[in-house]
Figure (tube, rainbow, N blue to C red):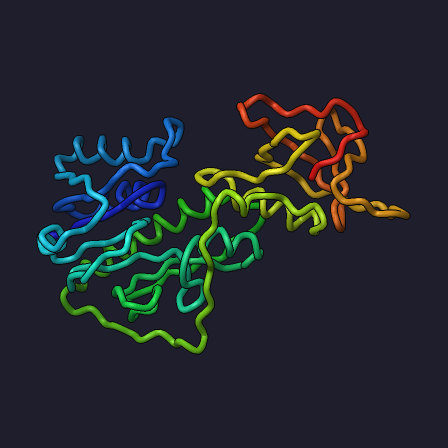
Length: 289
């Protein structure tokens, strides 16, 4: 069987690394994402893995008919472009337990909400967003705190194991229609969605910080007109403020700002300025917005 992977970014890279250990890959299609910096280097790692394993690699953003026709099964993982007239070989890997969380950035959205269970789904492409029939799913429980990178790694490994099962069952794959009445949706996110709402609960803000970290843009706030990226934070027990003013620094804990939230306090354990320098507040009389 000619098994292919169209994989991009962290999810595509981890999926491929897992799958090559147990399956023979006939070819890989990938491209470098705009936000794939030198620190992540997911495309470079996909390229190097293909070279080391002797797997043909095609670099393209659009899956053409000839590319799709080259495979009996072609798994799309982390792919960011619409596929026109997908071939019967194409199977989409979506990082959610469909029909919930159809759409974009489902794992980020799930972590922000504090979902206790996440997973992956394999489905046939359809005209409506992530509405095609299901070929298989894998779900697992999570506990907080958990970073988005940790969640995506686990999902990609589970997806690779699911893909191996589907490949073993090919061509006798069972399709199950989704329950459209149970569908929910996650809308696309960009950098403007990364701003911290200090009126939220401290625990919710800590989840948000973990959910929008690498490989995404990070949690943003401002301190004295300077943009700050918060990388790690810890919720602390609340105090009964007579007048609650979220965003104000209450105290410094060994140099780390402890900030008043809508409910609870949040200690900023690690943060940097826009140029990557460590963030150290200069005193108590500061406000994060």
